[in-house]
Image (cartoon, rainbow, N blue to C red):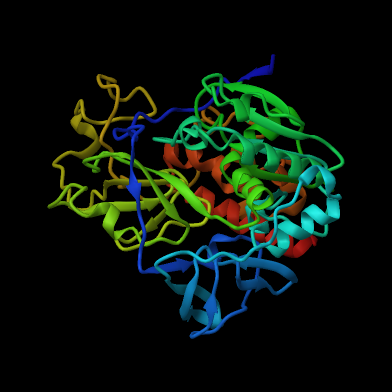
Length: 448
């Protein structure tokens, strides 16, 4: 039986709009757009130009600092645009998709018969190395380093999170092949965190990994919390992290010999008329999924991901690389209240005890409801931050960029997502995730 760890701190935000466990269909779009800014820690350089023809699995760009690290196209078709921003930074690469996907054949491989170098080379050549992230810095893993351990989270505890049981049903073979590949890449262990509710056999009875059950509320599903409770990252150590949903992509590469970036995506949120699951490729335009399926007549916030860590997109935006959830909530900029927070409305929710919690789920909008101010010492972060770290002190040290204090307070263990709940309950209205991201990027430049 798997070891159990109970997480006591955290907060489960009771939002309306959980996805009904029904597959609504497959979404395709004429154009597929890949956004290099999704991949933290790389400097993208284009491997294609407008007019080039690519297959699914062909490289679209590579990392300037690791030219062997390729980033594959999810579709076959013609490259129609390489959009650039300031300092010629690549913003998007757009491919006009073929009616039927044509794949680069990388050849089927039996993982158990391959060496660690062969497994690594296969993943890099296929352009899906970006699936693996590393701590410290929460960036795409450096392939030149060998991780102490690899951590995989087998569930998501974020608001309105998709069900891994539902998504991974029938993909047990690819999941196990992915775990076998990961085991080759470390001299340590592959740790898998699951919730007690997980029934998927590919997760619960995975071979070659150490399975641990985590009990509690969000952020119990964050891989950072699981690392902190199992085997924290010390100065000078490197660990790799990924989601079980991405392990499947790696396994599929070895079992089928192709790169298939199809995701089963949960459409969630209070403003969605029919929630459910859709199959689509990374980079697919989402216009059709919202057509006649969202509340009309009000301003809406479209999010690729969840409400805490997702990225704001337009109605015609695309599914971002790491996301398996799309959320639609009210923007709130068209709401005008006479006395605001003092109204004591039963429709309001607060993480504190300011309002009576009369509902099981609430329709919340995207308003901040206040302006930035100095950090208020109230221990509000500690109530929702379960890691053995002092969040308030670490945030202050990061703002001041005091490297010694940042290291002493555990900066190498964290990622911006670990502070999402702190940002939600913060009465100071600080952009804490942005602060941590900027701190990690600066630290990497200084230390490495």
